[in-house]
Length: 442
Ligand code: AMP
Image (cartoon, rainbow, N blue to C red):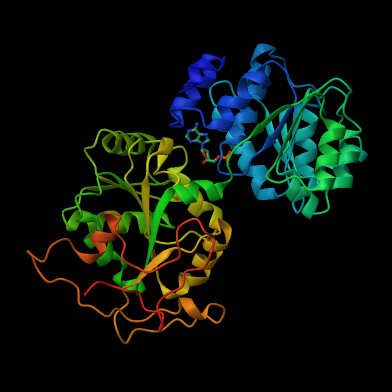
């Protein structure tokens, strides 16, 4: 397997990657970085979650290191165009994280905020500018930014740019770049207009294509429990009592939620540690080390804190709460099933989260097997769109006390879910026996 040290990156970058908890390059990083370091153009078919940001950021940072210069006012050496403010901010954060030990000048230009600070920032000059196209054009037209000396351009999520009507602004921006430059082009899909833009921009590009997120999702055995919000913690304890769960990451939506869940597990004698942005760096590193070394079986994390956690042999991912953004689900469950191994993901979904579950199923083009663990008499969720998915109260009692064998929930955790469903990977919605209840053995 390729290692970061094989890729030709400077020690100062490798150190930052270690600091971020990255151990091995993702496929797109392993494929793209060596060619990009040679100055080749690149056409990458990849979407978020593949590690594409580091795939383009690291070679750009290496270029800055190889030829260190003070930024020249009103210029930038690298320009990254992104469709949304959020993505632009995220990309800039990644550049800052990977460049943390030499601190290049990284800036963001997006719409919806005042011009003043952006004008001041451009006046100082930048190494790396991440921008959305509209506001960038304003600054180009007013002469506050000049691209005549820009060395590298990255177009990220080009197909999303097309959806937002940015193709013409992009062409106007590209026209201001020098003829000799390095071009990087990333898109998850290749509609005709985007293929045309790529053809015009790229010279003899290296092609890199990595599996879309849905493929990750197909490798992970997934199960969802419908549960009353108040019943989640007890169900989580029940699930984690299964010794087959050798190493689990439990995801919560908030930092406080992570702390509360970790405390609850501790009270139930399940060794757990929480990591999130409010913890000090040393606390985070210790928690991660204990988890890696097997001293802590369960790590409770928020999405942000879980970034960059690359621990092998995570047997289970548990979504204590479903993420607001469906792509985050794919990121989360990708923490298990690393390197082709089979992994398991269990989600606890209360009534309010059902639309989030639907969005996840739509994105991954899968129907996730489910078990209804809501207490009888609890509020019923009526899904107007999917009659067949309407849940029913559980028909069987939970096993009582010791000697009852593995708890029912734990049986699912062992990968023997008993719910009726469509065959995996068919893309067909689950069809349940008449009445819609989960089938169980007597
Ligand atoms: P991206 O596709 O660039 O949005 O990256 C998806 C997530 O993977 C981000 O949270 C990154 O911090 C993380 N990531 C990227 N490369 C690696 C790596 N080699 N090892 C572990 N995590 C990574």
